[in-house]
Image 1 (cartoon, rainbow, N blue to C red):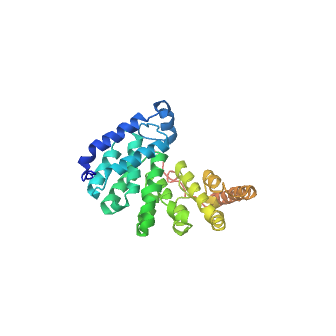
Image 2 (cartoon, rainbow, N blue to C red):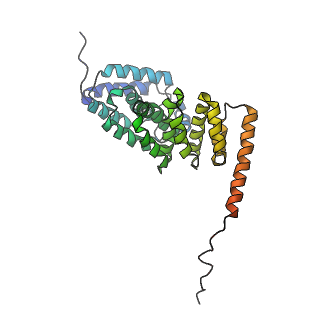
Image 3 (cartoon, one colour):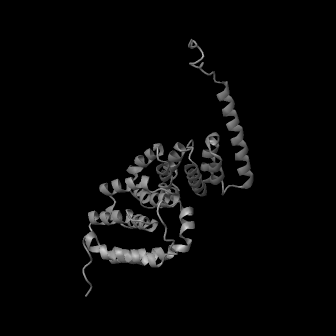
Length: 273
């Protein structure tokens, strides 16, 4: 007869430790340092092959059985506070799987993680996973993610773009283009590249609409944004957009030079004798 599943986070601690031991046994430590640099991970990396990591994760999730949402949150927090990249990735993946815990207290937890998920790999996994799924299921939360575009934290601003995943893939581009427009003047490279990535994905769904968007805002686009956004565009069109962007930026710079500058406050000051 099958044993009753554990009901509290404290009851699954042996399972958690066993899962972590399996991850460590599967680690490729010789590749860990290079992979950590590539992922931009703030934590050491065990460097498991992705299929193997997912196999261990599925087995652990099956062994967990049903847990009340508060206990599951506590378990996720333990993973998030772990010492390796894979532990944080486990927390993200479990949150993405367990949609039954997507409600107020869990959103507060997720929101804290957004600033702590530094490096593109953790940030993008969190944003394109549970954040994207949640705001697609509850569109009223979109305004909260829209506010992330004004955050002083660059990884939160980047996360705002990856949170658009479900809408972009479904071809619903209204909200994605509204959000991406807010980030066109961002000076952080990783944000600029992310904006380009999601404009490229918009292009796949509606090339004409995305081209109109790009032409309307060409003078504001960073070079990496335009390059990535037009990866699927014909070569001649890409060259044309680059030329038009250069002309638009030159015209904008000329207009800025024509604006009279206020006299320096120092100019009229008497010299100290």
